Image (cartoon, rainbow, N blue to C red; front, side):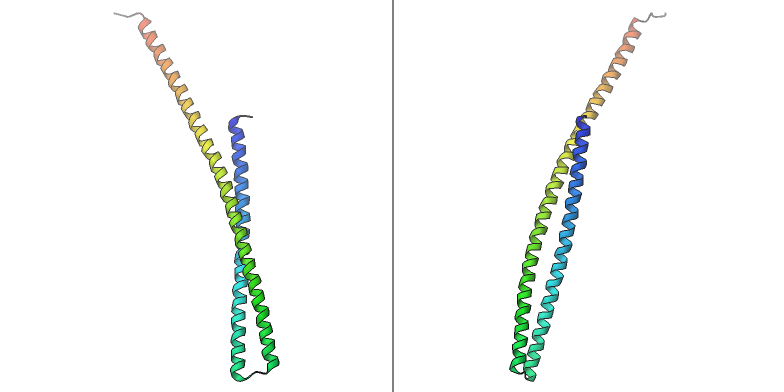
Length: 152
């Protein structure tokens, strides 16, 4: 197997790895958006429920209902804390996937750069070969013209 075809194979493998890393990153970002939306919903619900408690307190509330409101708000606060933690962890997963994608992209760029350099070298060698051939043809023609009998 030639070095060029090996390099092409490595480039293709790196491209596939980069694409897979990109898909994984997109999945993690989508999960982050979902977790963030859940956190926002919980936050809104907790605010609305606290508003209901305030309204109930203005209208007068019995101690048992007050206790139920407070218990439920405490459970919402715990759920909010878990949701914030889940969002933090999801953001860390996104950051790791982003880093993995960047590493794969750098690897692919390195292979592409190496491939471009090899291609440029191949073009240079081909141009030199063509120039040598052209020079040889020109000197052969010049030699034939010098050695040809002259007509007067």
